[in-house]
Length: 259
Image 1 (cartoon, rainbow, N blue to C red):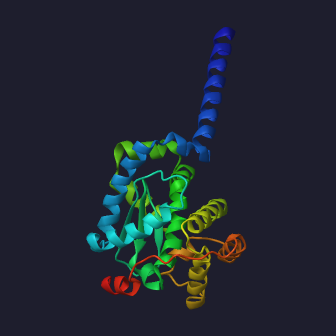
Image 2 (tube, rainbow, N blue to C red):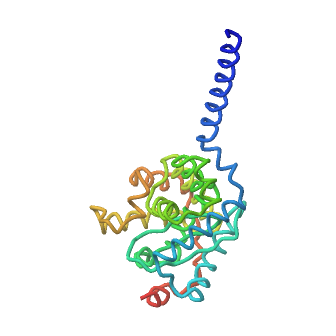
Image 3 (cartoon, rainbow, N blue to C red):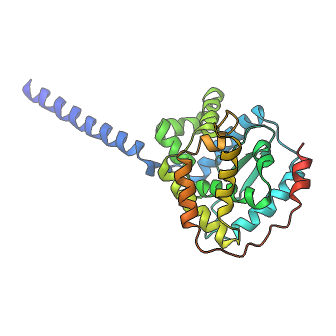
């Protein structure tokens, strides 16, 4: 009888060690590496269907050509391009842009309306591209819901769960460490693409000045914490002034076409 109890105790201890190890392993931020790019593409399919149920997209032929010009300039400053990027413009008064899955970036018309130049939007997109290249969205999801749940989503695609995931991706912010990392990469992308990195701080400051109390519509600022600290960081790390090469787009005409 004692031997049976001893054997049972050993089995239980081994099981607990395995469970504890798996739980720890599944909740570390490095687990985004266990989500393959193929699996991320599957999540993107579910996510995009949900997004386009909730928001109307702007004329794709019109926005694609504009976004491609901006992306081509930014990509010239990137050491690696991990995805075949798509940048969608969605009709909404929200002043927001966000990174989703598998190289999908979304920009609301409300944010474009606040920009004065293509270079300002390029600065915002450089920051979002940095989130994508560093797989911050996947890291956040693994942290928030765990690797196991994420794998279940991939295999099941439950629409209710995907709706909650969509809310999380659109409105939730990243950690200060992730924001700092995205800003560091964005500065590099912009400098290498001959765009002044302070275009990003200009956009921050303009929105902060126009909307000192951060009303509900300013999701892009409210979901990016420590704004004052980030403005200071970008300003201090933008480096020597560069001769900016303008992006050849008629920005006012493009903005008018979105109305």
